[in-house]
Amino acid sequence: MSSRASIIRARLEDCPALAGKVLAFVGLGANLDSRAGSPEATLQRAMASLAALSELPVLVSSIWETTPLDCPPDSPRFFNAVAALVPGERSPEALLQSLQQIENSLGRVRSGVRNAPRTLDLDLLSYGELIQNTPVLTLPHPRMHERQFVLSPLLEIAPDFVVPGKGTARQWQEKTGFQGAISPINSGFSL
Image (cartoon, rainbow, N blue to C red; front, side):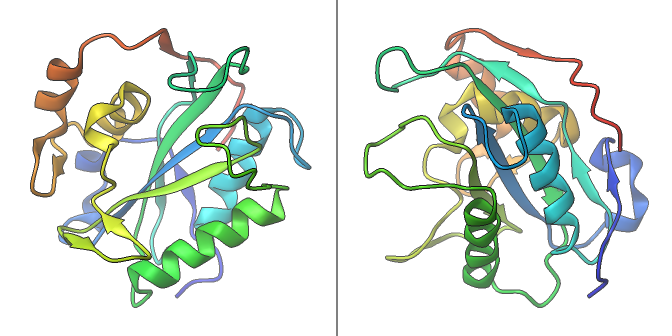
């Protein structure tokens, strides 16, 4: 595995090097400042950290600003993105552990409160076409197909994405409808 793959903002179909590779899709979210700075800066730092986990370039979406859903009252707005990486020989469980290490390195503290504000949340959304449900990891992520803050950035980089066992992400986006304000932002993120 390379020590650091590049990060590119592109659609999967425009990256022939990724064709036929097992891809892991990761959801990124933050709504509190971290050691990296603002939530946007945190997502940018996390994207850079994902490059160390990938054999080939990491595809990243725009950063999207979203209204908190199912969160404690007065939670700050979230910033979300999706990335696709090539995990190589790394198992889904090992990748999850690496994602948690990135969260910890940026100051993530698990409060025990569901959907509480956080410096960084990295969710392993899918790992190839794998479907599994273990005490450690459920793939695909059990709610990814219900969340616009996942589906919109996901469709930006993988418009034909199929949620394993659930159907296309585009179909789910149409079914879920509007769930709070969500819009891509010009974050000044330079790749």
